[in-house]
Image (cartoon, rainbow, N blue to C red):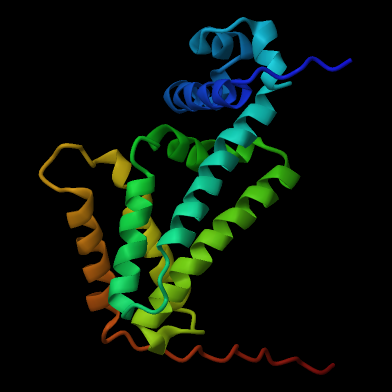
Length: 212
């Protein structure tokens, strides 16, 4: 007979995920054993195995839960009926706010996904693509001239570069607030793409074939 779940099972599992994310971020996934994770979480190794059968599964859930929360936040914040710049600003602000107190999870997503199986990586990367797709749509509304061109992806990923790596320098409280940084990122994208004109893609050169 399977061991029944405690009433606070989900809360304990979430606490394990949060502490594990901090451990992975600080020391590296490859150097964090199940013994170290159990100690850091304040539980016995046997109790840890009640929640997670191995470190792989734990890492997967750290990243999966983080991405699920980001997707939920962005879905709730997306308002396509707004003016393009205002819509993009709302999305950027929502993402920055979702990253509050999630630096460890975000760091683990960036640095440790590669340790997972190809199947699990694919599932997580599909979630990342869903997130990127919403922002890409908002960027193309701000700069419709780059929609469907080779410029849309680099502009969208440049936006993510500004937001995703802010945790390396951002301090709260500090001289720049999250709201002010959301304004800055949005302005850089809106103003920076205003006169952006896609360049035609050169046709591939034909290679002459010598006839014998």
